[in-house]
Image (cartoon, rainbow, N blue to C red; front, side, top):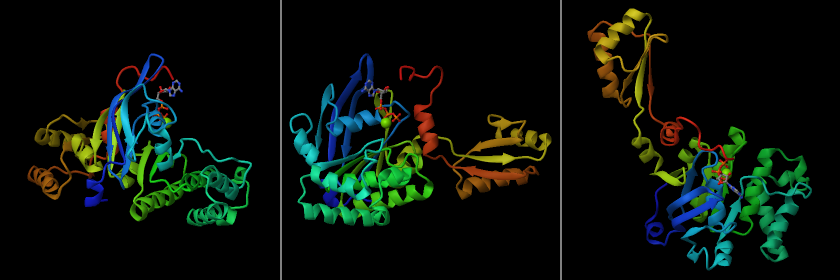
Length: 324
Ligand SMILES: Nc1ncnc2c1ncn2[C@@H]1O[C@H](COP(=O)(O)OP(=O)(O)OP(=O)(O)O)[C@@H](O)[C@H]1O
Ligand SMILES: [Mg+2]
């Protein structure tokens, strides 16, 4: 998605400076900065316990920060929390639907909480049920819903108030691939059609790759990397061409030409660093041909967000998260 000129000129939907939060002697956020343009999708990634939910809770006025400042939709987080709340919608990490009510009743309850007139509340509830393909089950109690249906209803409830900024804390965790794609479509639609700003947290790098204009990786209290998916992928090496040989002799011959750094004698494979472009591939094949080395197979590995995530947050030694 490309930011429109107006989106770049408009004040950011969310900006934060030096946000800090500790629980007891555990520092969760150690001064984080954020700038999220209107009408964009921002994904906050991080391992369990990194502080993603805490960040969402702070920015959505549910808990207060120990330090730092933030503006949400032009409202100061500390001084104008009511203004912030009127502009945002929050879908928490754990579904907030009431199981005893029906899907429609849950939506109407949200409309009441938002002080919408009855008729308008019913109109929006019906429209949302339709959009989320829940019309047929609108009258069923939510206890009878699958996890994916609850997730969809949860997001629909967030949208009742027509928020300009939506916080989604792990919106698709536990969903099957099809339901996940349905939700992705809905989220993209909100941004493209209505110019909504989305702040999401996720464990799924594929989700961030698909949805987010910008991605930040949160780890050990700070943002350790930020950029588009492509920018983050460029941060780390990891692209390579993997050659497999039929026997140890061929592998040894290849090692003489490419070096032994990434040879695996048991698997009979060799990793040659490279970006997987046609010229790189051709160069590798030329070397093999020139030396009459026979390779059984060749696979190209381009770095993905998984590599980025593991490289940036990779734990060596004892894990830090022992206090959870
Ligand atoms: N209310 C609380 N009281 C004490 N500690 C808390 C509280 N809320 C969060 N924490 C701690 O703060 C840290 C960050 O938690 P948070 O829920 O923000 O992480 P997260 O990135 O959302 O993790 P996950 O991926 O598991 O959802 C954790 O160590 C957690 O134990
Ligand atoms: Mg969380």
